[in-house]
Every structure is written in structure tokens, then in C-alpha cells.
Picture (cartoon, rainbow, N blue to C red):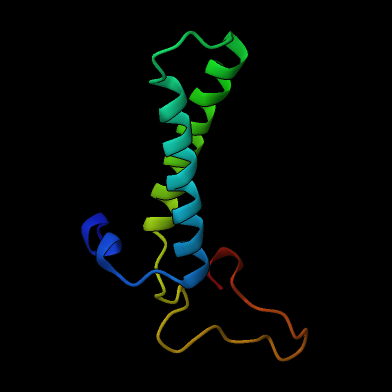
Length: 90
């Protein structure tokens, strides 16, 4: 699945909420950075981190899809051990 299809695919509800939170963080950070008054260095630094963190959270949440990662037939269980055989392609 390429990036365009992934971005257009349905997003789970948890990640839609997380995307909204990320957008809010980025907006608050951007607002503080663009403030027309001189702010203390600590606030400016924190605002920069907020903007970056919000952008990353939003981007990752947008690219998370509802499609399953398991192959068509699902993942088989090892009958003897009761564990999934997914290590090393088994």
C-alpha cells in the first residue's frame, strides 16, 4: 500500500481522536511561536517542541489504517505450543 492509498484509507476511531489532539498541540505551539510579544526562552522552546510533537502525532495518526496486517488466511497457531508462528517467516 503506497502513501497516497494509506492516507485515503479509513482511520480507526482512536487514531482520529489522537490526530485531533496532535493538531491542537501543533496549533498551540505555532500560536506561541508566532506571538507578537517577547516570551521567555523556556516557553518558546516548549512551543517548538509542542509544534513538532503535534505534527508527528498527526502525521502518524493519519497514516494508520484499519486494514489488517495478517495474511488472507490469518496467522496459524502452533498446535503443540499454542503460540503464533510469526518469527522468521514461519
